[in-house]
Length: 203
Image (cartoon, rainbow, N blue to C red):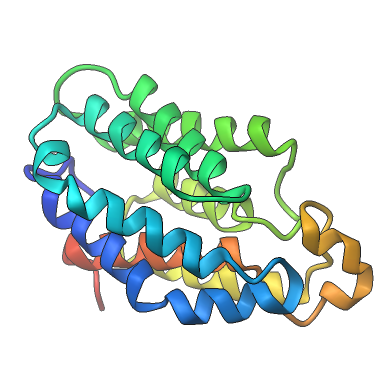
């Protein structure tokens, strides 16, 4: 089961470094169906978070999540910054005081997912990051096993290849968006997978 981490720093570092390491891949995915800047923008945001990691990790969990969210809003261009910012700000606002069990963690993540839905006016099945976030939330509610969450994210990301985009610039391509993994789904799966690995959830 996923436990509330004693230290946020290794989780922040893992997620940020995963994005940086895969920036070229994210750019290539976005070049196929979007503006081609997702990798560059996400890398910029990850680097900004790493530059402040000591200050962020020293904060209480709700404040740390909000700080990361604001950094992404300020540093990540396009739609991704506001969407990821909404996720983390929503989680921070709903986190509550002290440690949390799995149900409370799921409630916080659900609040973040709802914030992404509202910000992007989108939902599951429209070839966006929500197609990873929502299945991961469902798995978190059911079991909360880190290895399972990692697998849920990877499987959900791969499934976006067969979807037609209905939101964002990719939606302009219509049927031609089918056959490409959504870059936002991929960046979400990368970060979730890295966090699960940092929690010891690799199989």
